[in-house]
Length: 188
Image (cartoon, rainbow, N blue to C red):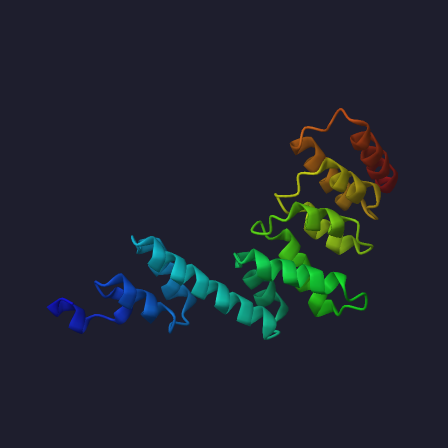
């Protein structure tokens, strides 16, 4: 410990172990973000990211205002937590509006990489849940996008499925044509 460490906050200490310990006591997302951007030690940076995840999860679970929840869940990196959120919705057919919005946010989160879960949820009866899957960049299965597009109830949703199929390189495939027909039918 250097003399200068006596006058610094512990999260700026020269010893990385002291910085990691100090981070566990912080609850300021802005400060944690600055630490992540400026930290050279990967372990300390990871500790700050994990602490941010804890805070985002607590925002979601506290049933904060809907916008805060959606913003928080988009930033969560913990895939196990995101999977838990999605599976808890899937197991509860009478889900509340709160649970639905949190689930949609989790499905659209690019940190959720479990494609088999995304494909399963793409077949959900709820069109909002299907759209949450569609907006996740990790859903690369064209048949899931095709299912979403064929079962879309409005033009915008079918059109989003078409764009996703185009990005995946399936514009000249039969599944694209069936989604296109549904989009044209919905457009009027």
